[in-house]
Amino acid sequence: MIILQFDGSLRPPRDPHPGFTYSSKVIGGGILDGSEKLASCSASISSSDGNDDEKLITMLGRYIPNEISMTSANTEYDGLLLGLDWL
Image (tube, rainbow, N blue to C red; front, side, top):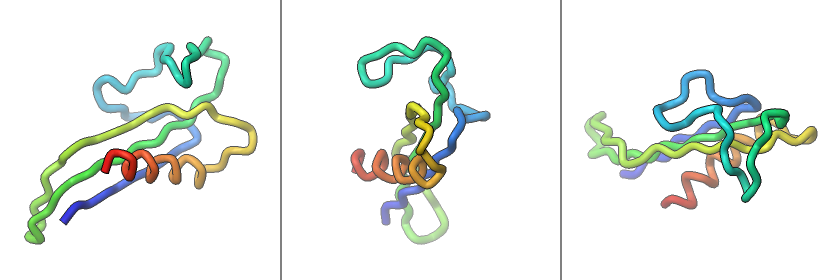
């Protein structure tokens, strides 16, 4: 069985995994100048044999430019799409 878990938030993560940093990143071909507000989304994909033993396959995350009309539901949907795109 494949398990997809996802989440999204209207802020950068407080407890990022190594490599998921706040420094200037390239998003959509442009470099952030620090004045933009950021949201984030993540997804993890695991496999399970049905006996409560899960094995992590991959963990994904990305920043999203936070637009005025964006909601938490938008960021969670982006997390779902991130995981589905990987699958």
